[in-house]
Length: 195
Image (tube, rainbow, N blue to C red; front, top):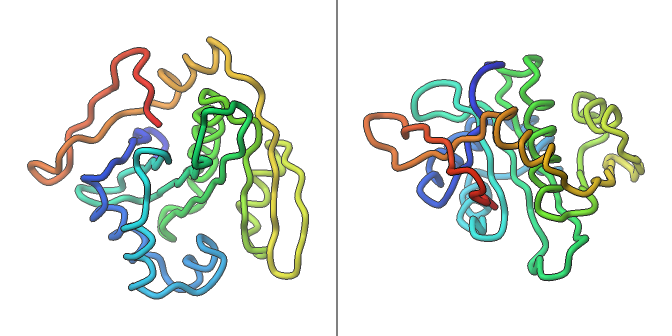
């Protein structure tokens, strides 16, 4: 899993995203959404994803299946630089402890800073020790509110180095049309801005 590429997902991948989120057990859904979420609510959530504004990344664990998923929710208008982006992640139980959450978090941080965001907000359950450790090691400030934790991570300005890191270091690829089982992997052209 460590070498599996982080893929940028779009509208054609809604079924893969639904499949991943429905595969999460009840406890994992609480970790991802902060509360118990029904199958119908999962489908509604995926149906409301704004692929034109937000960024959704995944890591495949086998053909036509996502083992891990990230949703970066950008503010409605990015005309004003310095916005706040919200981060959500889920990893299938069988793949936890392999560093996927950390890889996806690092990728999301670089992606957000390269788009001019100044802060990342992460809402999580207090008992999500793995996510708390990831954001703590990144330098995020955490506030505890009952069973919830809200972490805020200041993001540095983008640099040529961060642009290159996103391009090469994280093996970002685009997924195109689900033909022949799993969509083909393709690197975006240099300078291509995937939101």
